[in-house]
Structure formats: structure tokens, C-alpha cells
Length: 424
Image (cartoon, rainbow, N blue to C red; front, side, top):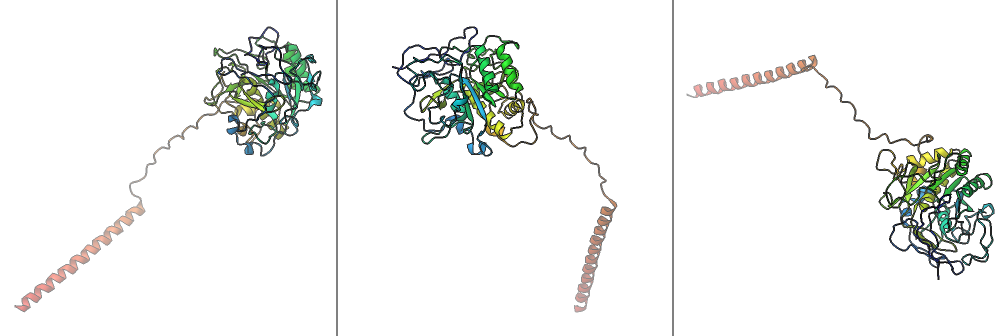
């Protein structure tokens, strides 16, 4: 028997949804669980038990679009610390074992010592490496999963370090206040350079709320904060979600294979960029990979790019890194919109060597260059003195030649006439 999770219901006031689901069945065998499609209204059950016995061999479609050798020619994210504030991050999966810094992790939920879905070696641990759902493990894998024989999946920053912070679970136990504590811990205690938050709430949070203050503190400390925009976008109506809508946060929507907004992706004025969020492959607890959908998995794609930029340009501010990601995104309009922000993130473009230092905020493209003003037609004399002299000389030569021919012809005629008369 496996535990099955359904699409997340609307958020109860004061709680954060991890963009995952509530349980529909209770018990589960040791170290097994299930993870649904993250976005509502998608076809397929979205279930995947874990650990997975087999790896996904092929290269996932979002990675097929990235020239990894070019992306990694300067750095793979070594030395950059990325805090994943989520449902925990499993450090047993072979692709994450070397990535997760358990010593810096923390669990802000009460450890469930009696949950049969957690292995004996994990029960009661408070270092953030307990992930009963698999959500945080997937998020971490997209950022920093190490390469492994037998699978084409790898993280965008495969040498970055993951700080596991458990702040939510399948019951959506996370609150905005505990999220604030987790953010502050990641900045002040764990030394995070980048923070990924694949959770959201639609409850309005003002600038004086604990979470707003924690986010502002992180940005003041030059930490890049990346957050998912949310999956409640089926109606197409823009709305604000938090922490995505806080100033300075890079809010990420989901795009599909056509670089268009995924149907479930929340639109709104806070959206900075979009990233692949449909049929996303990543790591699951215990081993192997699985496929899922949602802005939860678009955000870490961007966080991975931010980690690479942080490693390549350590002196850049958080605002400059965010601006570079937004400015180099692939877009179909000149500017931003509420669906995909400044466009779909382009990892190689963001890491390309461009002249100068990026501004602290993106600007619309200049558009096609204006055609040069037509030059006025130049008026020239019909004939210069030199041209006239050359023309007259030509005429003289021509006339002289004609005269010579006439004279020669006349002489010949006269000579022939005389010979005819003498012959008579």
C-alpha cells in the first residue's frame, strides 16, 4: 500500500501551501510515499512511489535546451550555499548525498518519531533531512543534483551546496511565522547565498509582517531570494502570492515546452520570469527520480542559475543577479507581462560574458534600430572642364580620323580613274 496525495486544496488562513497535497490515505510502508502533479487540472495521476528502483535514463527536456558545457565553462556553483526551505531534503539519494550539508540544516516542525513512512535512521532527526513527502528533495535536485551514471538528469549547479530546512509537510503545517524564522535562520546561521521557497500563501501580508521583515533582512544581507508564483492560475486572473510578491524577491512562473505560461501557473504583477514547470524530472527520497509539474519546480531551476551567477560574479549584488536573469530571459514582447514576467529564463544567456555590470533592474529591449535618415541627393554639373576637354579631344581625334579616311579614299578614287583613262 502506498500513500497517495491529491492536488492541494485552497490555503487555510495563515498557512503556507508547499504546492503539494493533503493525504488521502494514512498508512504507508517504510520509506515510501507518493508525490502528485504539483499543478491542479493536469492529466494523469502524478503518483510516484519512492524510493524509485529505476533511474530515468534520458535527458529531461529542460536540460536538452541547455548547452551544459557552455553553461559550466566557468563554474558549476562550487562554494555557493542554497537554502531549500521546504518539506526537508533527503540526503540518502545518491545524487544528493554529496550536495546536502546536514550540519547546517534545521527542522522547524516537530519530528515525527512514529511515522512509518520515515526510515528508522531518520526518525526524530532535526537537521532538515527528513522528507516524508519528497517535495523538498525534488526542489533540491533541480538545483544541485550531482551527475550519476545511468541517468541524464543533473542539477543546474551540480557543485553547489544545499542547506536543508524543513518548514512544511503534506498537511501544510507550515505557517508564515515559521517561514520567517526559517528565512532568518538561513541567512544568519546557515550562511545562505541563495534561498529557494517553493511555497506560497494568498493571505495578504504587509511590510510589517514577520515574513516581510525576514525577506527584507535577507535581501539587505545580499541574499538572492527565489520563490514560486503559485499554481492557482487556471482562471487566468492575476493575483499576488507571498513571499513571491515581496519587493526584491524573484518570483517564478511555470512555462511549458512552447515557452508559454503553463495553464496552472499563477499570473500576477509579482512574476519576474518563467521557467520549465511541466513534466519536470528530479530526485526523490531514497534514490531515483520521478516526474512532476508545478511552479514549485520552476523556482529551483532559476535558483540554480542564480547559484551559478553568484559563483561567477561574487561581487554582484542580489539585485544585479536578479536583473541579469530577467534581462537575458527569452521573451516574445518588448518588456514584461503578468504571465511570464520578463520571459523564460535562459541559463546560458544569463551566464554569458556581457560587457559592463548589470543594472539593479531590467529594462525593456531597445527594439529594432531606426533606419538611417536618407541622404539628400547630390547635384553635380553635367560636365566638368576636364571632362569637356577630354570630350573635345575625342571629337578631334574622331574627326581627324574621318578626314584621313576621306583623303585616302579620294586619292584612291583619283588614282584608279587616271589608270582607267590611260588604259584607253
